[in-house]
Length: 308
Image 1 (spheres, rainbow, N blue to C red):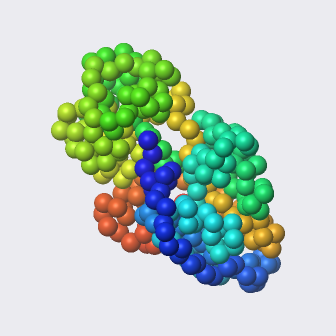
Image 2: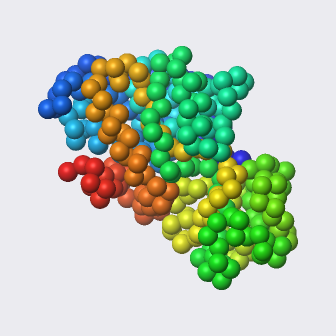
Image 3: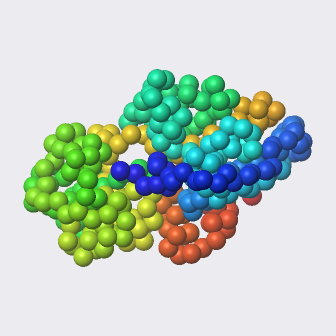
């Protein structure tokens, strides 16, 4: 159900060479400061997250090399494992499914801490560490217009129980058979809708149908900038239907071992403040308002008191 920006990705025939392996630089009053190369996939959200990590580290004396827009996960993850990059932003459930394809170590769950712990086990042999996950996610979400939310007192998915039978659900054509879409809404929440309208996978057709009142509830990705731009209400997944695809930094152990603990503390401080609303606000600024991602990251870090 999730878009190629995080789960599927298209395999590239060519190999993109990435350079700038982290060295053993020093600097800052806190002691050793290893040089750090930060990578990202080719998606604006990823570049903004990379900028958050880069700028907070630079503000604390680290020498940073940016290797953004490298391609999809099939390119970025091997670059991280081989040491061509040292750090990137990841999504817990998606990365676990990617690195442990047969599920021998464990499968993603709807619990953030549990999924992060299983992911760490899967990353140990690769000499990688997943740091603290944020509350922000990029996964399936169900949204309604502000007008609908107000009229029917909707804040969470379970609030749909008394009204779903009179509403139309919109989403990708396969939604009725998918465990994280209509089928899951029925099995986990007991929701049966009046009708289903096949649209796209969290794309412009769904946004237009919501705005045009052709549907009452639509599937969008939780970090979609349209949620902020159109003042949609993202319903809280209060019974935990979706797998925990929370955003978290993944770092090479070799870099953490050269550091005095400051790098881990700084990156975790970003995760502690990165709520869904904060991420969606930045995505809207970049994708809708066409603001520079670097400037958006700087403003957010300053607003949170994380850089000077």
